[in-house]
Length: 491
Image (cartoon, rainbow, N blue to C red; front, top):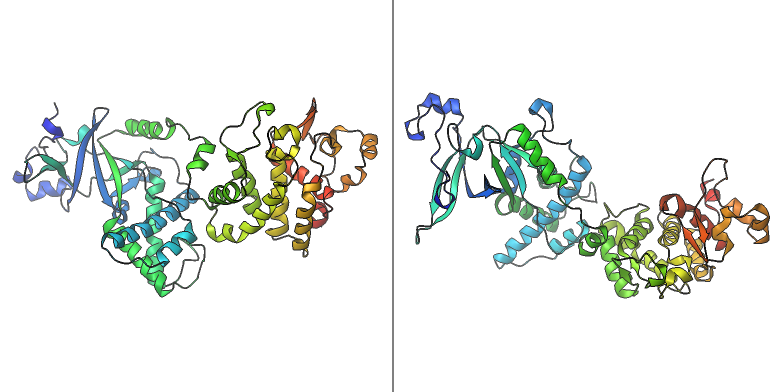
């Protein structure tokens, strides 16, 4: 039976005696020396007693462990993904700078501009927070009370006598086994290693905890002020919230891991991009494409082209710009240091796209193939290859300007036979004036599928395998705008 107000019953420690009556030997046997007191709130998650506690950012790794190594005990975790942890670590470093900044504001101290400048380099966003980690203390009875349980006291409000919180005493044996949050745990350790290295060596790490884009660069005096205060924030001010389950066995721990990681519904990509204020490419889309250029975006794409408003699906806009900026299929890993110097090139590209007849108009997909995302990806690929690729030609600036100038005059109508090149006989290709296009396209090998789409009624509909299709469409656009072929550039 649970006590009133969620209070913990007085636990019985090993040996059957209360703490006051324990001998030194029993204390050593039970592992209750070097106890650390933690203030917690006690709850009952679906009826099971749990602690909710705040732990200093730097301290969590010391008192926790992860069951992803058989040498540590029974497995209850997946293997660690180092790259995912690194991304979280960068996020945490930004959060610690923000925490140091807020601490200054709370103390009515001025905030030097260097705080915002460093966050900008790492990737600004309007808010920082980490979801609670979930852990289990294994070697205690279920609920933490009874024989071998956790000792606790009640913290009372001195004025009202009401329970304000509880103080529990965790010893060396009370390891917090991470059920959900091993990557956050590892990331926190990486963030602390980064801060310690920067403060000790006076330069940004070139190996190990490489969380700052300017590897090996000396740290200026102004920057060191920020890193010192971020380090102090991690030690004293910033905390991690932890929900601690008590006495779960391995089967229960594994079930909890599954439920926490598999039962949640994944956020729709368009909604995620719409809400994300941290990635520099999504910010570029919102501020520059939608804001300055007035290109319409939507999070809903009608299946019927007759209902097309001309707006670009937000997740498609993200994928197109990821290619233009990074030559990648997603915006993961984009940083302001890489994106901002490239923005004008991509703005110039979209400005010319905006001039293509019927682009962005009502029923745009019925009027021009340029409204199909895979065609825009082809344009983005050319922009990347001529501006940011390590293999770009020597006269790439001149070629890119030529591409921009000629792009709006390309025939993007559905009737243009170039789009249906692979559906035409050799005679029809010659009759349509496409005889030189073969030098630009991949070699036609028997058995290799070159199906990029087909005419369906009056409309050319490109296929769904965009990664296979847009490079070929890019070759067609190179030919149509008089650029050298991609194959010639490779040679």
